[in-house]
Length: 318
Length: 318
Image (tube, rainbow over all chains, first blue to last red; front, side):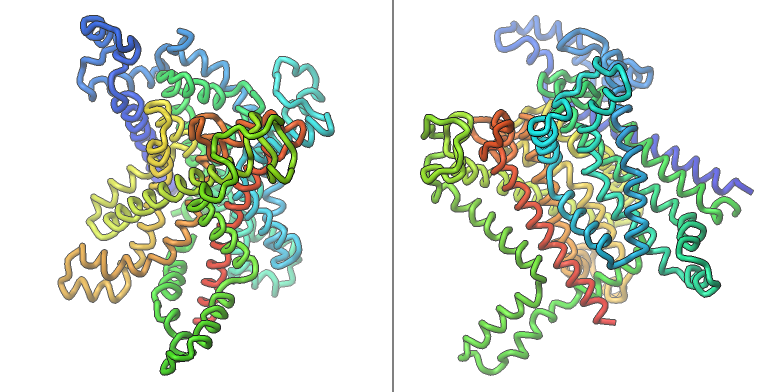
């Protein structure tokens, strides 16, 4: 009875894995194959050809590209991203120390932004054309157009410099109490929320509006159900799929925003690790960070897809 | 997203280039001498075409485009010249927008920076849209295998967040002006591909394409003559949106110090350079930020009013 849904889920899983494989090929092609000779770069202009050849052999650069890719992929699958060029620590260790911080930041942002966005989206769909609705429209237009670093700098200017309420940089070692936690996370989370709440609310509104035009809503209205009941009981179960999609899509904007926000607030997360790696051209570290980012993104999209399948009874029963 | 409906909307909306010709014919079909009447009617047509907000957007966009071309000519000082002993100077007659962290005239810096911000973004948007549209058309008119392969590949590319992808490429190849154009284009080709593909796939099902196929026209002819002209309009709106995203991406990169390199500077670099003046609220850090915000909001307003006009025309058409 559930075979159809199971097949769909299996197909989605397979597709996500295939995409991840393609992503790894793209990332390896950009970082490992195209930039030319890493051995020559590492040794500089003055190196003798013998030195270069020796190092090339040590790096395994004298092997064909496909073989290098397969080798690299095997290492990545077993969790070994190589060693960082700048401080000789294993990349996986560096990522393991930073990843939890980024997850906390992303989790807190999701915790704040998702409920706020859903409430705004649903309300503005219910009261279409009202002041709230129009305000949401203007707000989305402007937050989409304003870069994250602008929001972050303005926040620093207002809350850290003028009002002196919050610290301008995030020192996680100072997290001792709940109050300190709030003070340190307030600005990064607020900035990230600014970026995604309007977007998410707008997509939620579109999804709810789409359902409000359906004939079963009219039926419920004629039956005498209250607007609250119509939205909560009839419309929302039908919009779980689209809303999950909207949430996943908006949260994936986080990956872009977090790069800027972590750098500005000097937050010790994965994105600032990656920016440092890019500045130092530390390839193994860059590869590791990108693969983690892409895996997280794909996981998010996959979860949204699964929500859509599971929340649709037509797919469950056939 | 219900696809058939949108396809219907776009075809109804954009398929008729005669909607531009008609008012002209109404105004003065047989009296080309009365240039004044024609001129006034063109003006009125332009005003009718955009809402007030849309007109504001149009003015802002045209203004920045002009500045991008003639900025260096009208700048009061040479781009890199240190002209004042005062750093982070406030607004004055000699320096209308104050001075930066080295005592350079901020107005000149912003005017010179416009070339980079607008020029780079325009170049990479053009590149991304052209390549994306090409592949989108290719996927739509060719067989299932080409379509499937291209779609998978671009899906993989789209699941690397644009900022992260840009960071990877910059880590591998370093940051230079041609590289930045390539990076931004690469990051936004998948989006252009998706939209053009879905538009083209919808158009391919319409009768006149079927007729052309039955006539025995070649695929290239169908793509060029039947499909492409009918998707130009929605692709233009998409072009504007993509331009906004690329402006934000490039200024974000410059803000991280990975974009346009000193002594040249786009608006993002200007914010970064002068971030030290944030505490004093120096115009040097505010002005480039305001410039970015006005440009992106302007483009957004313009697109939004174009879309609204489209929606109204569709409603009226029914």
